[in-house]
Length: 132
Image 1 (cartoon, helix red, strand yellow):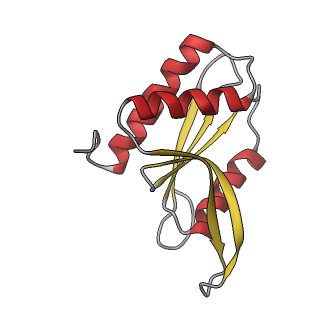
Image 2 (tube, rainbow, N blue to C red):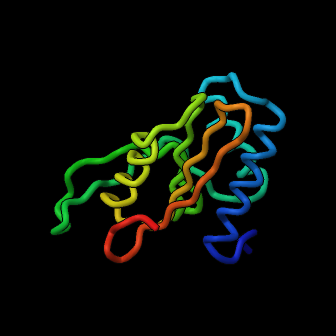
């Protein structure tokens, strides 16, 4: 039995787990430390988590163009893009949105562990391939 019911509940689990990790480690570590820590804690909760998972990128007609490496792919449906920067930029968010658009995955979380306050934002790619 999976420990979540909807993708929104899955996002809540990832958000709460990321917050707990940030509360413990604080900011100041390299991105890979947070990525590994988040993956470890999610797996302990029974979630299937892949790190640096290659995901295919498609053209609009379905032609495969290449791939990108998702920081985390949770339960095969949620891309988690993690950063450890003091200030996030539009380019950081654009990276996640590009991943969602080109991979045809719908749900993504952008998390930043690098600031004194933990930051997380959910993105949903709608049918028209624009973020909501």
